Image (cartoon, rainbow, N blue to C red):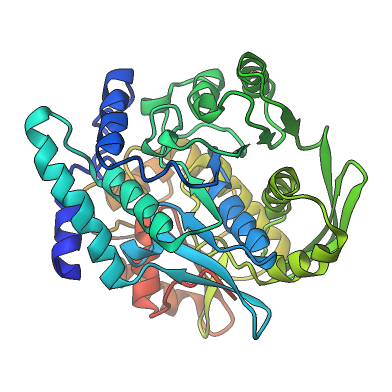
Length: 450
């Protein structure tokens, strides 16, 4: 099977990421998922997995955790979604370069992607007559597990796709579970109340497996406590059982201290504009402390690895001339955090704000927070995918007449370049899709390392 054929097979499967109105959240469908992985020989079973779920920050937490584990000499499998530029970004190995002492992230090669896809496709075709056909995300999840098993990884850091309880990644038997910040998103699938969303996310909690949680809203934390108690799982919560303290926040650098019991790691530097990344890094460190014996000689290596751990497409500057920042903020809380960051780090900057989002998102609240930011020019556009909200509809919902609208994102980016001038700034946000198009337009390849 060639790489082109492998991509065609995977993209030919039903894709809930592009068809969010289709439901996959029921026990009967998840039993089919378990049957499919069992037919593949349960490739996830040998993996020492750390399973991460949440509304906000789970991808960043996975990257920080993978870097920290790799800094100790482990080979780490990293599975994340969605991707920005290429589907192969989702499946990667994270390892320490022993000559340079740096951590490297290497996505799966085209040849191995094709090999793993071939294994999944053969089994998929055999099982379709029994009603056990797989989906786009299930196939990629299986491919990741097969690849990690072939690569003999020491650890596998696994991000859930959507929810947790009925997510394909929930076939793993993790050594540790991490729950990032819970908020409103994917309400159509997960429920309209924080308790409902938290219940779906908490479905990855397993019997006697330690759980690490961000500080949460009361209803979410009560759900986590109840389910952890039922599963006899120890629950450690940020702010109660371990703490983080930001000591400085300069442009593009957040410095913080991490405290857990008698263990302290001070002056950790993250290459980010976002203060909240200190919380995500703290979750990663607490998970690390939980699964790996605490040894003080590792601390310099961990500190160095986190200083390298760039989070792609999250408040990322992709060009300097013109100054362009992309951010995949795609729910209200993320848009609010992005606007706060821009006001803090770029006060008085003339910003051309390019916004495109998916039509299944809470657009009213996202635009409410966007409206509070004093951009010089708002430009609404849409990515070339069926899931994209119409640019004209976004403008109507925004409610201001001096906004610009372009159905074609390239035209929107070109206009933004003219609007921002020599000393201005372009910010592209709202979805992974629109950020992917911005990165392609400005010719910036995705990289998970500095």
